[in-house]
Length: 435
Image (cartoon, rainbow, N blue to C red; front, side, top):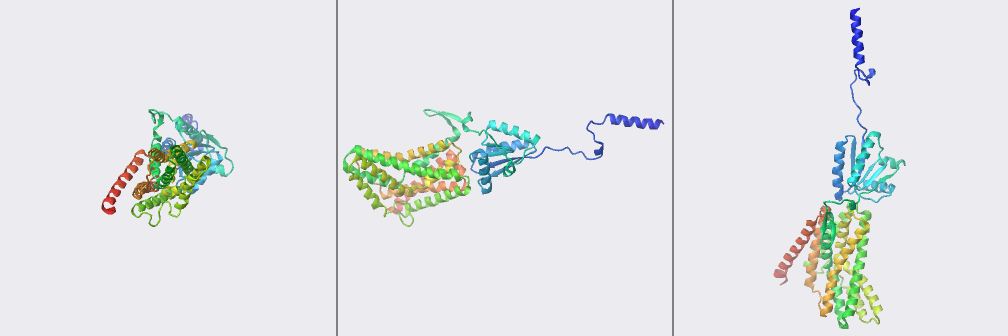
């Protein structure tokens, strides 16, 4: 009897001190607490996107803090299918195609800053607790309820990246390399032997009028419309790259084309107008000369202005043969930066102002000295060597490492290297071969 009472007493004590969530059916089974459900964060990135690297670092840190989070990074630069997925999702969220773009359930972030980072982490925690379906599956099944989070804007990112420049104001230090790149490439493009040839020949005809105001008027109109037509040509390149620029193949094609055009210009220094040449064809010059002489016969100022505009349009088509690679390279590099639409066109305006500056200087010097200068063959060959060398190197960078062109020192280095190579080659050629 004592033994039975002792046994029941021990049983009651054990039952009283068991945990409240004890399940007799699981007694003896191995305990395996359920972990949080997996949540997939869909991230569309690009090899040519500097902001994507910083975003991926943050997302990796986020994943380390939340074990149930899986970060699925898809590079639209190297995979056409991923690019089409981003197009599809961006359209559903009524957003532009940008990188990085982040999708979590019904929510999307197009670009991400400090504020969006905290919003994203809160959304991840919510999904880990209550669950979130895959965004693509929701979209394909028609169950997506798009909730677009306000996009990150560089305008809100103030602080140590902004500096004060005298007479200019506050400038974001991250964008300094792009204005410098614009000045360098625009200046090299402006050293266009074809444009110099047309302008100098036009002025040499107008000098017979012995009227400085008329020379300035005709020359100024010619330069203005040359710049305007060039701007329109570059705007076409810009829109092409903005529409399809996320495809790596397009950048590779632009780089290869720039390398080929650069090589042809370099060839023209050594074998001038032999074989393939990016110069005004001799067969086209008589028509240009005829249009120029027609200016002298214009019966009124209005007809002279109209003839000058037509001449600028015709001449511009031939001028593109000389350095068309530079506008293509510049607009491609421009679209590697995430800018507002008006900022893209502002850089095109800056580029074209730089492009026409040497022409304007020539016009002023020629008008006020009433000189009869002309571009010599040797000067044209040296200009071709300089532009060809720079174009060749820029093309190689576009093919191999396009993001290097975002760095200020790379732009300066390419320009310096081109000038040194041109100076050495031209000096050696003139001393030992030309003589």
